[in-house]
Image (spheres, one colour):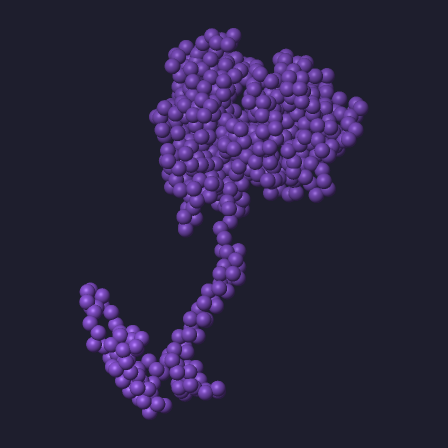
Amino acid sequence: MSGMWDRRYRASNSTISSNADSPYLSPTSKQSGISASYSLPPDPRQWGSDLSINLVEPDDELHNPTRGFNSTSIERGGSIFSARGLANFGCLFILGVGLLTLFAGYPIISHFTKTQLTTQGGFNLGGINATGQIPSLPGNWGLIDQETPQWAYKMPAWTSGMPDMELIFSDEFETDGRTFYPGDDPYWEAVDLHYWQTNNLEWYDPSAITTANGSLVITLSEKQTHNLSYQGDLDLISSTQRNDVYLLERDCYRNKFCFTGGYIETKVQLPGANNVVGLWPAVWTMGNLGRAGYSASLEGMVGFFSVGLYNGNTNAPQWPYTYDSCDVGTAPNQTINGLPAAAVTEGDPYNDNHLSFLPGQRLSRCTCAGESHPGPFHSDGSYVGRSAPEIDVFEALVDQNTLVGQVSQSSQWAPFNANYIWKNTSANLEIYNDTGTQFNAYIGGATQMTTSALSLTNPNSYQLNGQGFSVFGFEYKPGMIRNFSKYITWVANNATAWTFRAPGMVADDTVQVSARPVPQEPMYIIVNLGMSENFGEVDFEHLIFPATMKIDYIRVYQPSNAINYGCSPSAFPTADYISTYAEAYTNPNLTTWVNDYKQPFPKNKLIDSC
């Protein structure tokens, strides 16, 4: 091969030198111009490179497939455990693990490490950080007031054996000049109406309430307005007025905050003097399905009796149901075809001994399937009985006989027991200091049944006497009667006053009603100051106006193992129902559900044809 190449090379070279017809230019040919400086001869042999096939170059090993290999051998001595082999294997292993983690591991890891959404709304407020903390809202609008001292974030339960309580809501009222017209405040809202249901003497006006010197201040002044002699206005010296502030959950129309179970506490300076009768200050709670002052929403929940007499007054209030049974207790007047007989003979002596003038429970367990009802359902398919129950933190009064200040601390119940007598045995009723607290002799009438006790107030905690403050509250555990674990305990003057236990409202066979549970509805908070002769004598001669009630703070706690706040929880929803019947909850001129609002009561399977 080498010899033949040499011969061909010599022959070709000779031809180029001597033959003028050669296709190649002669090496001696002259070229001019720039192209001559950069052009190469067309014959590679004239480039000066060694083109011999025997030339060994450094990279020949990479391009020669037979060098160092045969059909059964492996590079470098037959082993894969070379640096290059291990690197290749490592890369493939990492790639495989990555793909497996992405498509199999990640979904599994996400499932077991995802953050459970809470009722605190942290995610909706912009997310939580890695520690689970909810960001503070600018302007101090969080559920817990930033001014609340750290020591108040937890407290022991008043009831022995209950877990410690955690703070879930507070308002310290430290910012002066707050207003409570609709939309002014994220939690509280004042109303503009007459509270005719209890024959109040004043017009509600949002101008009568503000914050000053670290307190919520409600003022009653004397002024002619809206055909009444009294109206509240902080700027007017001469007046009397009642104003209610509602604390409701934000996403249900005017609903801004509700709670179910736990402890509510407030520190209050009572209005007026401790020995002049007539003022009616109160802090209380109501179930979210009824809006106090908006009577159409209340009929059949907390109805109002507009025909007949109540201690000589028309339009007397009817207090709320708390009931989850399907029986005659859900029917109007607690009777069906005049029965049971005790319901028309063992009742109110002011009303011909009739037991009840209630219109019937509007949202009862007897509601026919498919009727309008907020739900939910029992396992047997029946609706859960719903209503707007009431538990009072306190209603303050001055005894007209002794001229001594007291607070009434009560809960309201319907349907009623025969003669309004509940099972107030020592097991179900406990008074902790009988020198400071006594059982209330008033137990009910045709429109109300109550469990109530009266406690003496601190005489130095009044606007005109001492200007001090007193602590009031109640702690409760909601639910049906199973044992003594369901209860309501009231606190007066920062000490336990009395306890009601659920077996006190067991079934009453005399009037054929079942047990009534400790209120299970989400409850909102109401603060008010007013006057009504329904509540007792009014001493116009000695009352001094303006009268003010001051509230230093309101705080709500719940057991650490039973946090449950919000106005439309899944177990007792309210949002859709309130939305459906929004006008009943926003128009105070609608006084009844049926006649004014033109809505029927849902059919009751004991009375109507389903």
